[in-house]
Image (tube, rainbow, N blue to C red; front, top):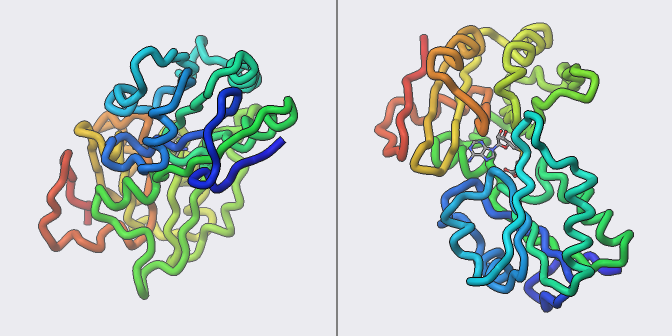
Length: 267
Ligand code: SAH
């Protein structure tokens, strides 16, 4: 079966699955390609991070199946999501799997595509704006910046099945490296402790970007030493992106027009 990785050149046929990146929330950040696929959907399988505005772009009569993961009891296991996608495709529908951000960045898109291909179902990959670049732009923080940051690591703060956070901490010690944690709010205390052990300074700037690019966007800035406290104080909850590194303060001396509010970095 075919993995269609240049969807502009491939027709979206009945019986196909398209893994479509819906971006971080602001419908303006949807690609034209994603829009074209969404327009042809017979059924959309979607999760929590896909915004209402983007759901509203689905054609009339398009079936909607929610497989959102709420962390708690009612989560649909990944294996079941894989099966739903294939069942819908085998029923002869054009299946759009709508995912927040990009399907291949902490989106389990690879697993869904592998399962589809193994079951003989063709799969299209439609990229989306990932949270790191979108939230960075909407918070006024460059991911890399000359002489400040020469590398950027996207990393997951989600714990393993055994509850541990097993990450390559020593690889994160370089001061001129921006670190972007996805799914890191719950484990932030451990992240901070481990970064200290790896040699990061307690004054390293940190930004928390909650529901970035949406009208509810909230940006809180601090430093490694007070960021755990700031999460409590500002009641920061997922979905939140955590950006760590000197790039965070790049535009602090300038006015930043913002959708939400920004708290100034602590000293
Ligand atoms: N595939 C998605 C990431 C899914 S993992 C992507 O490419 O963006 C889910 C995590 O992504 C959240 O816990 C959060 O850390 C981050 N995230 C996604 N959308 C976000 C948003 N609008 N604002 C802040 N963080 C977001």
